[in-house]
Length: 351
Image: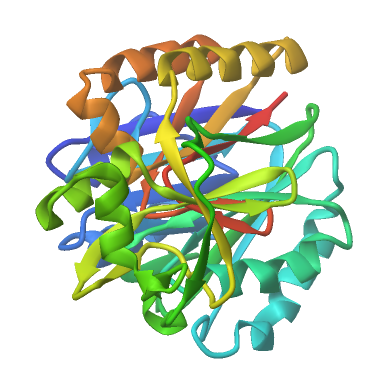
């Protein structure tokens, strides 16, 4: 299979798809004001080609912040796309669509991946999707888009998760997750007074969450929102750590980008040697996939901001380009199999 990336910094879709012929699966990344028109135009240009889209930034060796980007797979893939609606209420109501698409593509663990874009309530959406994917052992990579809207096959959806089931006819697929943080000290917190609907942590070890965070890191209210780039929370999940970013200060509480429940055990994380970690990820991928057709990744918005502040973003994209055809989305949360994570990079590699 092969991967196409096209872009227009001023939102000209014709410019973005210039040279794209006979795609077998398309992903659209647009800006809020042009999203609807881009979705409709793309469907007219490539009717009956499975497609999904969201509002968000995209990249290959360049970043498209406010224009439009298109990533497409062709020459050796089969795909199906659709949406699970009412994701905040009952996405399982539509699970038969995903089950049917898995059958249609004849997906298997070694050669098939699910790519998804969500409007929110990610944890519930991923749990629902996983009930269908786990029967075939199919992995998932995806993320949260902006503006509360996504698209599938030329149709706009709200309160939904859209997905593409993609089968590689020329080799394996495998998903990866990169974490550039490690535990800070031996801090362990029991969360309480949480508001699950609004992702709020009220208390940590019985004390106001904001005050606990500030007393350890010695930051002001305003500095908390940038300090989370250096020191997010973490939730231990087996042998893995799920990163939890702070979104805003809410009184004496902290609102996060990911749900925290009463009695969850949290730790504090700190930024590691991200340059060395990136090189190790690339080395691992090259070792496990000596021949690569494409890499599609989702990088967190906070990683993008962190890397940009440290003048590393362009270097990062250039280093990832050494893998071959690399392109992706800047997301508001990253999906990795049945897990919703923050401040991470997830990707799928096609042999």
